[in-house]
Image (cartoon, rainbow, N blue to C red):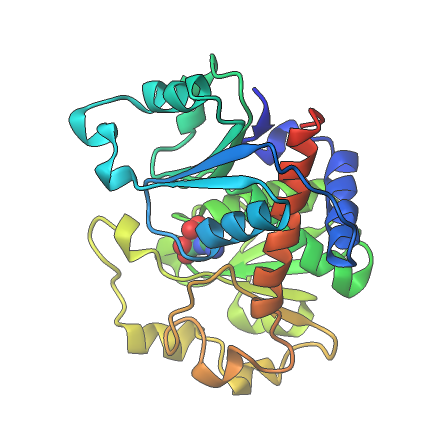
Length: 290
Ligand code: NCD
């Protein structure tokens, strides 16, 4: 299949190439596709990923069809396959899809236009990982040997699952931390204190309440007290360590209000980088290279 569905299909050299291309675009490299049309189909709520894809498409001069899925024929029982096949038949050159269904793209094997995965269930979020990696690469200039701890609701996080696989492949050492109820053993577990003192990257995750069948056993206040990143905890981090978060952030739960924009935080830089990474991915696909 064309486009970008999962990072598992990409060679590490291709990942570094995409990051370097995104940095070139950030530095002003000009490329335009005014004859192309791409549709965005978001079946789950999204602010950053949805509008970052739209900004990326606009920056490339691509025409955007922002599909209102709530008013589409999906509501009449049409399958995802038939919906995407329809866009292909209409002459659309690619689709961006976010869905709560793990690996929804497996039913799209007979689609011939590029599909850009904006996140599926708890499994993949390839462009989020690429923008995270770009942010780390801009900071350190390499990946090998860097230590990252992902703290929070690991079990329900496509961001964590995607990042752990690719970061390990790039030579990073990845750990997880946070409440035991969210530990799915996908990486070695550290206490919060160990994580703060030893990591180059602290990556926070929101508790994904919409995926919790029975809610969280802790209150938000208890979570903040035990695991929340406060300025006091930030003071224990290594001098040049950075704080990342895919957002949306829940201020006062996993992160204190005054940490969101503190000197170590790269949270808003991640969002900016997301536009350039998505431009790189779309551009490669429009050129038939992805
Ligand atoms: C994440 C997602 O949707 O997976 N957000 C994002 O894409 N920036 C994380 C989340 O929702 O907590």
